Image (cartoon, rainbow, N blue to C red; front, top):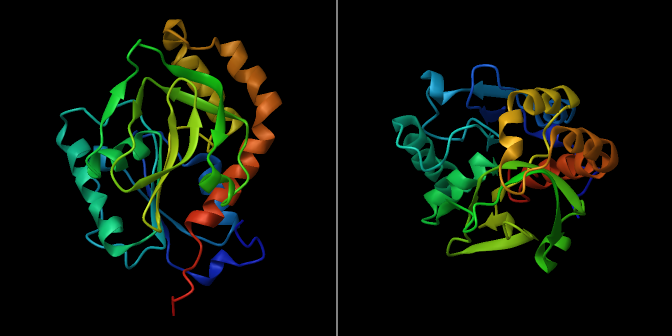
Length: 243
């Protein structure tokens, strides 16, 4: 388990936050990082904002989700996928959330694709940590999803949590690269917006209706929130060899 007494503020470099829509925010993941003493450097490549050539001036990076696919042909999508080689080659902390995790998998040579039977995960679904996952952090039993594609397990990646519909739910590559298929960053306001704007997707196979999204938050969000905070501690822990 991560050392909760350690101060993440020892590293005064900002965390690079990569978002995919003009109105997107890092939600409570951003709020938690600020509370832990980090500054945020928010960039949106989709709007033409450049990504740094190195992460030596950042504490690490998070790529968040978005409505696009990691398989889309738009140049900025490919550029983001290729850019993930920066944290990987520099062994800097990296976390991919949903689309961000799928981009990580694509960078590592894995596949991102829909379910063979067309099933989605839109709503609250159970996950189970692997033995390696259990040794790192305490995992919630139910998590929030909003996706129609999943990813396979690239060569060299280790599975940390699995699900029923899409097996690969959380992965680790090397020491400092992490990917999660689900969302722990949503505030209540963000979930309400997603439920309103994404209502047309609730008719997709295996998707839950909006009322179940909101009821599920009342039942399952507290453990997910705790997990999100601990996951950030785990990802952005200060390496013992750092000066």
